[in-house]
Length: 510
Image (cartoon, rainbow, N blue to C red):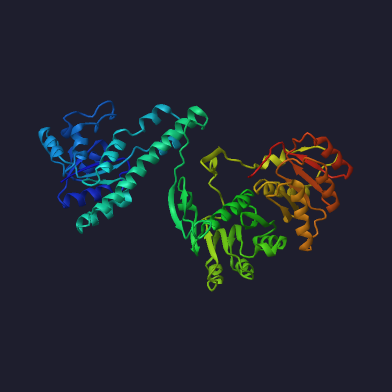
């Protein structure tokens, strides 16, 4: 039996090779892998002894040879294949262990195109695909985490067709992901990121119990290692809908840096938000906005959940808590609550992955775009459009309201007072409807919006929204501007002596 080992990631390869030798495998290897094996006293045959050619062109050509690929690809149960292999002195290769040049690591550390090009693997993917194609006869290993499984299978007579088939699928996933990464990089470098093809590749983190509904399958996939590194399950199991709600809540909370922010989300929309002196006060205040909707909701907490905060949360049914971290005493508070789910990011504060691009499925395909971000400078650099300016507390509330509105489904308006969301209307077909809906709900909750600031993620098309805001007692307004009736909006704000700010940047979220 013969095994070909040629790996970029050499972790665990020495132990793997030793086990293969003990099982009677003859090892063939290349370049750096060969050096690593021989330095660890593992007998291995240089690939050039098999191909009868030296490695060429600085290692660009070393395994692209019929004596290699013939050894992998010839079908052992095909008499003609066996005859040809014998005729040309092609010796079978029964196991191929390959992982590819570190292209991702290279583009992360350098912009030198010559270095990047040299870290595009050619022979590796070819061998992986050859072995995967002939999985009936050949074991293909592309993941270091599978080394122990392969050894166990070989030792326990479990090298079945089903076992090799599973490894075959991983192999094709490995090369597909690798080629997608290269194509996307080249399009980013030379075509502004929008080439003829766009490849979206993700690695499964875990299955959800089902999708949005019980009859749908669901799973979480990640682009890099964000969820592996920054999503820890403390209690419960994250559902498909939990994950989308968590995403909405964390995006809002994380936009406020290290401030003690708390956001409550229900069905993807915020129904409570506050930044107060501490997380406990922030949670209590956020809950006042819409305690009815908060029931069974998702709470994002930008910091550490301690016992006192846990006891406060435990007074109503909250389905999901996501936080920077949580103390053991706080976890104990929720021990008897079977339905609550708790997730942390193993950090002091919540964060998002900051993906550079965004996409959305539509029937028949998907639309793709640069990601939208709301920077602090948008509010700080917003232009005063009328005769009146906001004071410092109003400016702080304007920033909160503007970020919430910008990160919530359009059409959206948000009313914020003293660092807390007091009313919000979202996902409406009319901006006036959104304003009126928000005020109606605030009235039902006996919340006084007098003195609150108002933010909209897009311009107000008519002055009626300003008239309604003035009637409600709004003290300052921020919006992108850009309407053909901006002058009417400015006139209305001046009439009511309301400070009006335009950011110049629209944030539709559809």
